Image (cartoon, rainbow, N blue to C red):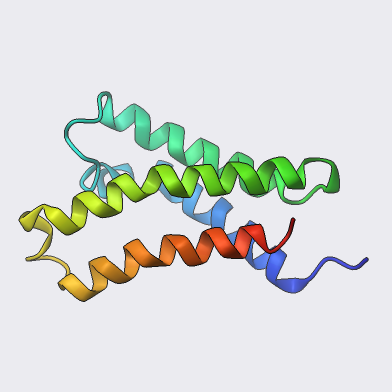
Length: 117
């Protein structure tokens, strides 16, 4: 079976966003909930996880593990998106509908990953 173009899009998206964790770590650190310890290390770790899962999607042998890993990662990322919704400091920077869209988008991304199982 030929690999669909949208799987390549997913691979590119996770690798690119993962790389951004290393290029612009302050942007990701700024949205990290303060109650999560070692914020900067968590930014780097999450970037590394995204890159690793993106690469793992490329191989049939690791694709299923990568899909489950992406779904778990997105569930964990819900914490950050919820934090942005409830903390009023983000309401000055982002309209509340945008914050809700980002939160709900995680479920769409989970479905997209699940589609490849």
